[in-house]
Image (cartoon, rainbow, N blue to C red; front, side, top):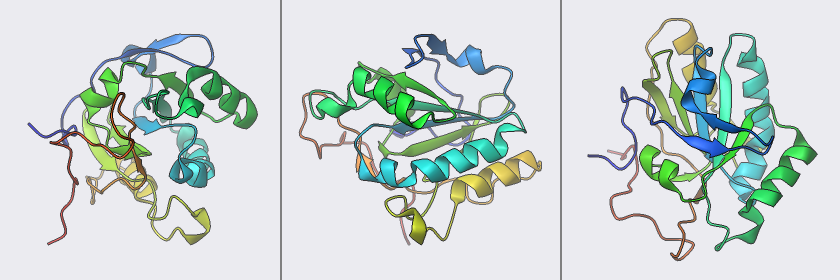
Length: 196
């Protein structure tokens, strides 16, 4: 089986604490026709560089019922700034339009096969995966963005069309796995798209 959740597969359930003091599971978003789950963190320059683009996308599609859920699975032992108190502080400061969840034991990152921060997953009404990968082609410097794959996937899906490019490679820092070197990735983690 592939490391990263494959197109058509169901979203794995979770029960994770959020910066707003609540605990969320998949069913808490049942009213949303489309759910975007993305693995993110506090410190990564690719996350910081593209957060405002992600905010614009989340706000643009909110009227159509699309919900965004951010999950931080990074080990605080690798980067202390990725711990829960820093998550709370970050949400207080930026007031992002998504819930921000903490995956302390990294089991959710493993269930989804998160490769990098940020890494996006778009699920349909039945919570089947219709798109995964990057949001934009230059997350580190949003002024240089020329392609927004996440918005295209959402536009196509909401229009009832098949997603024309369902797989892209996420661009960012790798997930910081606990007890491992900061550049370590699981042996079976690989690019979603290989160039021919």
